[in-house]
Length: 631
Image (tube, rainbow, N blue to C red; front, top):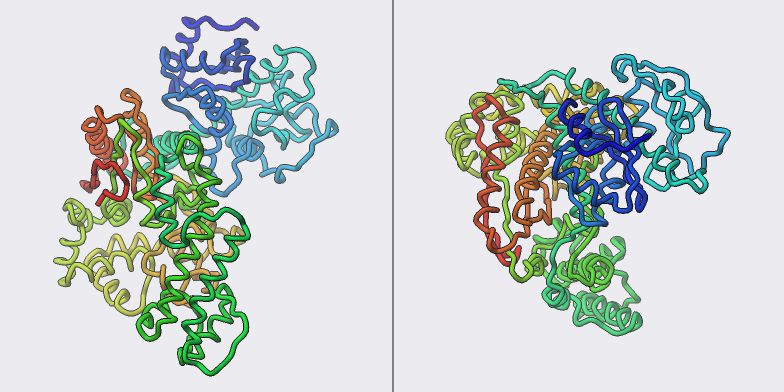
């Protein structure tokens, strides 16, 4: 199998729909490539350098099984490609669920049943020549048995071997010959290209919800954006968030004191903090008392009872109104904040997650749960507001921050096709025209919009929702239709095409329902939280919420993908994606260009995503040295 020349590869790429090239990188040995039915094993000592050259000269859309495997290999050599098609990310759009391993992706694309979850070990007895399959999702005439050289990739029933994930397996059971490994990589790339074709066909078969569809269906554009988000997640994890360690330690010390030299000293200091709170409760009391564990809600309730405060639980929202009733209550609430810093964002957290280069790193997921929001570990998505002062630009750089304004109601206007709500969404402040329409003040209008999206039907929110029903019937009808689907367990799709599984057995209250954020219920009593309600009602409310939050996540990731591409020429990086907020780290000389890019990328994203709706999307953009300076 002779390697392609660049010119020959260029001709193939030019003739390939979507300019798609499947890629498998074998560290230190070469790459496997597949283009339009052709595959090649290309040996080279610097595979990442080869990919960088091809990316620069040919500008293909790289197809891979998952970004963490392939992009991770490239990032280790500081190579960042322009565009990709991520099979795992696209699979989650088309088929929902949480599984995105190659075996599940292959089965869905070829119409096979979902295979059993991956096992720790697969033996040679599990492998055999597959039968020919031309499943509904496989495209015209796809025959997994047509390539005899692929036999070792399949089990006897045409399923992919369960252990084919990551890159290490490429060298398994191959002895001595590097070209055998590269040949296997090329065959793996060829299979990836088959799956991409099947996914593309499935996406194009979905209805386009836009009022004025463009050349590319919205679902295909969603696959592009989700793939870019998967790549961005790997880059975010690799790059990290710039952190001023000294400022972080100053913040931490304000709660728990200076860093102590030994674990024993830390334990003693913790006991002293506990005792100071307990002593305030016992001050002036004739009652003795043994040790009280402030981390035990039962013991805290007993402590509160001694001062005449009888509460059903010790949640902060419930105790806050009694802060001034007794010094012990205030001390306990302050202690709880300090305890969270000490245990979650303390010195140990800094030591574990901040590298020698001053970057805070955590794992990132491009699509966690059914709503499809990006999430991060190491506390990156839940940093206390006070810690933002420690997120600081490095010398010669600035932070450029953009926060989407009122994104979810604007998304609701688009996905529902409600003309009245779309008119309100042309304003910089959507809630002002809504307030005029509902004949109420702005705070009430905001509650009404949130109540509509989150299904709140009681109290002030319920009264506001009834006004919304009269003023914006199409938007409310859209939400109710989603809720009804959830009640009966019928799967739904977001505006961008993501499948949200709601059928019975997918979860207690809808797939990934714990990932949704409800601003109205964040501090609600436990009996009113979705997780405490009946399963059927939980499915309905989850669905009502997910069609908005899921679509908003798709819009956000499409915007982030455009910004990522636009930053490439001047060396800027996205360093944080926080729900509806982007934080860029940019060389100071490109400050104005980065700020302008955030706005232009938002406009271009809205142009295709909300085509024909007339809805405006707005963002507050600021240039700062520290994240805390952004307003």
